[in-house]
Length: 434
Image 1 (tube, rainbow, N blue to C red):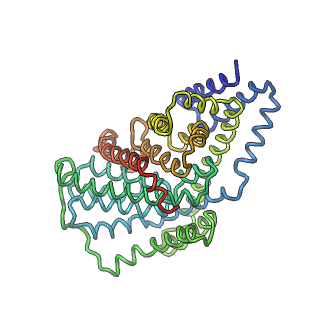
Image 2 (tube, rainbow, N blue to C red):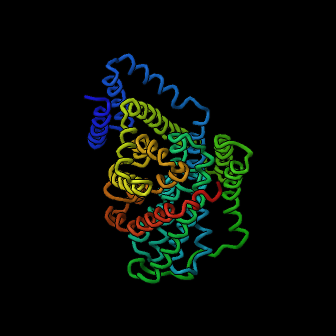
Image 3 (tube, helix red, strand yellow):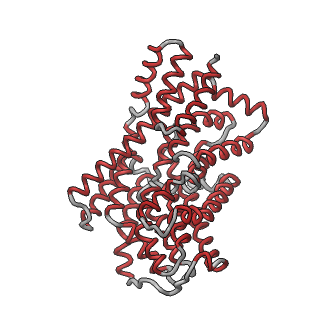
């Protein structure tokens, strides 16, 4: 068996192990270790590579950005800032047909700029927005679909955990990836909002009861008081990065401190709650960094096998070019999105596809945005659709089935795919601020 054969077999076995229920990181580590052992016919080399990869993969201080932004997002969720944003958006859009759905998208977009985790957005707005939409007569499918669909903005609008992960895997600047996510995130939020208004006019039966003019009425002072802390936090964190005042890691520290101050000021943070936030931060951070270590080792094993180079030569021989490569890549990502989570897709696919993208001369920042959007579609597609499951478990309402939520997300899945095609056709969108 040649080294290339071993690389191919490892891919097949990885899919089998993951579908069998083994954790993605464990699958990558085991197959990488065995692969290097067989390729080099030396267990000591395999052991040394595991030790070296474990040390090198996360040795840089830049990885401090992961726990800091996770901590900031969890503190923001604890402070109920998502509820404040939603109330203001609802008040401003109460006279728009389908305005409550648009308010959910707007609130999700703003909330995304201080969290970076789609699952957190889905959980927060399931509690805040779905009961309100049901109270005003909107259909359960529409209400849950809007929340699950717009939650994907959390991984596109910076700071984004997936953007951070892609930056590490592709050796790109975290700040550059954050900048690249701004315009696509705004375009996607605008596409969601316009589509909701259009559905409200064209398909009133699907959307449900229209409560135009109903909703909270807030004074300008109250609205500013609710939104000002969020806007200030976004300005300090993202403005500091883009203004060159501090690095992404420094921004994470500043943002976490700001979120802590806000949570204390709103009296939402007791010692038991703070301890839970810290434990959850540690759990998410360890999970992400463990995946990065596993992906680093897996990438090295694939390089030894020659599989990435083989794929490059195969695609060159097929004459696929950039368009053909992107078609194959997106098809693979969308298929995997039906089976496994977003981070795992990136860790499995990118070690194979990044060398091909580099060979074709593709801008890796642009490619990163395409990757994140394609991966995020998987949050809404059955049977995995993790955002849908988060909405279902958070809602805890037996009257709304899992199928209802999946059905409600389908318009937003189509909109995401359309925006993905737009980003591919117009690279200037993600590269607008570069």
